[in-house]
Each structure stands twice: as C-alpha cells, then as structure tokens.
Image (cartoon, rainbow, N blue to C red; front, side, top):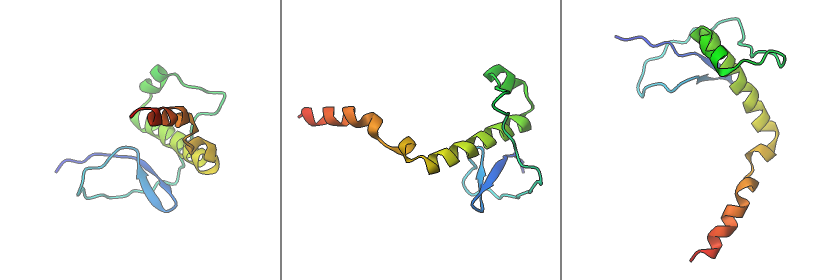
Length: 96
C-alpha cells in the first residue's frame, strides 16, 4: 500500500487538502497544534525562493495564503462579481 502525505487546513470544521485526493482513498488525519503562517508583508518570497524551501514549509505558506484569500472572497463581494465580463456578455447578443 502506497502512502501519500497531503497537507491541508481546517475551515469551518472541514479539512481542505492542498491537493486533490484520489476517489475512494482512505484518509488518516493528524492534527498539529501549530497554525501555518504566511510570510509577513515585509518578507515577500520569489517563486525561486519558494521552490528552495522544504515541501512542508511551501505547502504551509500556500495553505495560509489560500486561507487569507478565502476570507477576502467571502467578505468582498466585488471580487466574485462578473462585471469584468459584462462587455463580452453584451457582445454575444450582437451575434446571431
């Protein structure tokens, strides 16, 4: 039996994995007391710096960033609007 380690974060009581899990996979959950943290605003990492970090640290940074982005999308409805596509939607009505 092959074991893959997939990290994730708990949001609203649900485990959100950092990558897709195979359908029908048996899963064991190990809860750590440490909360993943993203680099501070002063410490911006380039893509090459991020690649040099250990996998667990990279995933913790990405999970923390995704959690922060989730909060932004929940609280700022302008981010989920479709106004950016309104011109394209208007163009579709001219075809026909």
